[in-house]
Length: 271
Image (tube, rainbow, N blue to C red; front, side, top):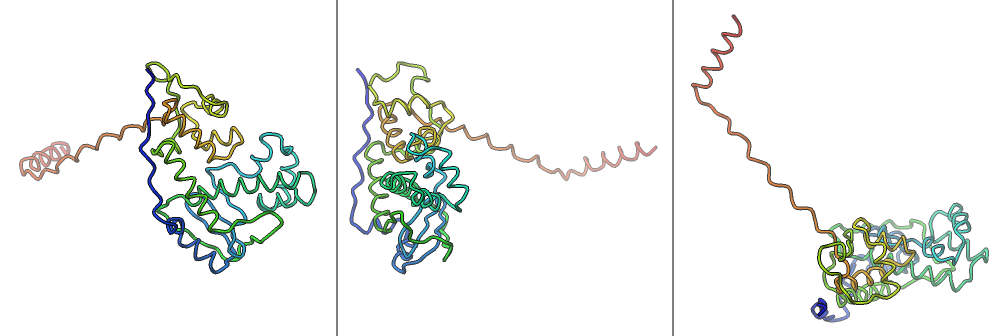
């Protein structure tokens, strides 16, 4: 009989104020219609007149990856636009004006990248955020997002992942296949999307690495990772054991007999 691990029920959402708690600073910036760049531990949000126009995170693929991974845009076209623009959002605007990409496809990929990176930028952090006013973003032809919408979607995604599997360890650790360990492999079937993730799990790649390899949004990859973890297909690589504590230093002796012997030794060496 196949054993399936079932996570505990999701934590309830107590009220709508929970979304505002994601980043009080971001809420204040939205209320004052600020323009600039909010730098947080896991990502960056670009604001224009209090709206989010662009987001970046080292944990999610950028717009160029999403556009070029599956043939939506030729890699050479993206590289040409990126070389002429200071950031991916401006590169996307160049593509929009040049007409090399359907408007709807570009706007959809832009929003996908924004919400994906924004999810990680708003992750809990022990490091305070920093905001640089007037750092260049502006409302352009690509769609922008109200702060409240980004916070609401981020909270929804957190709750979805918790329902799938409540332990976040697999989100950031290198992943290993369950069939790499001794014992029978789980027999539950996987979807084609999950199979693509499973085939790339090698004990080295993290979920963020898999998302870039697949050209998919990082959050969608996390959904597959948590489902595969809940099904017993994959697991995070166990953390290395902590090194043993250093031995205590040897006590410094002040025994007068030892001191006398040292003086005798020094005297004999001087002969």
